[in-house]
Length: 206
Image (cartoon, rainbow, N blue to C red; front, side, top):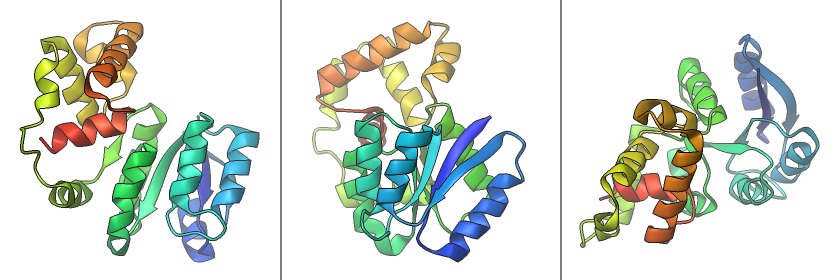
């Protein structure tokens, strides 16, 4: 069962998402919040698998809430966004969120994103990825940071960029979860990147 907290200051959006989530036999909505501060407090209390956060919320916005949640290792944040918040997407990258889903996404895409994030995968819709690439621009060194990777480390990087969780990478490469974690630690040490979201975006922007 995937335990989830939903945070959005728009009660209509919140109720709509609640209806979608509660129809699923493998998802349990354990709490809902109308601002980021309340979402963080609920995560501290309930430790959900995934917290679905609107970006624009009062008191504490979704990005700052995600940063707090990640810092305390309370849950895996998935952000709800719209394109008029595009500059905030870059700010959210630094927080290390597990992904973004557009508010107007169909129900099956939202549910798929929740399930992917619950297993440790990342979710970046293609239109959002296109914006990130355009905003960041192409690396003039062709992402030279990846030139020092071993062949196996590059395989791990590529699978992280595909959104696979550690368990899925382990199964794909026929290696243990511990070995996957070791590879990711080495990749971060070699590149100076701080989390898997940065690895994915840096690789996709090569």
